Image (cartoon, one colour):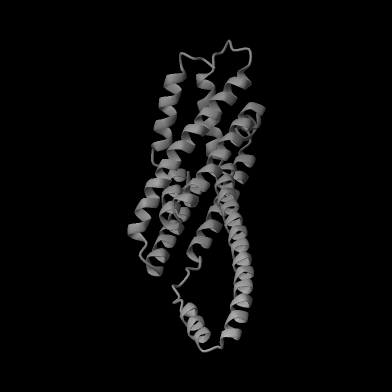
Length: 246
């Protein structure tokens, strides 16, 4: 890596990351719809895709895709189809309706009507049952949370991997900042790709955090959540359409 060119590379990378594009637009709508945590998880998937593309540049796969119109078109159509699939998921996503919780009050009233002996017995039994149910619920929520986070990460990763234009961009962009006399050009490109991925993750995380703050004002109930989901779906449809056309 040419150290003299590194400042230019870093500034260029930051400007390119902040420029309006498919990744940060989807990241913004995802964070508005599902919160900052979902946005940061998506950012991790997108940036992992950058690392993947960097590896393809080093291995020469990117050059092969560039020289093969069939491979480029196939990757483009599969990528667009995946984006349309994500859009469908956003449009049809279920929104949880708020439900009143009166079970605690009912349990308290029932407990007052029992005898002292039954009170003690029921209390012990209730505590054991409640503890088991709570543990089961907590375990289920943890499992669902991990599954959801993995799903969001996978969406970001696949979305980036299946975009051939990102691959060709890195094929053209990264080598410009490598010294032609460098004895290890592959290592230099790997370092540049890692730096690009890191700065992108930091900036994407900031965007996700800011959008997550706005979500509290925009999402005031099920109707607002449905609207945000639909906006997310429209954005994904637009990205998929642009991928096909350009």
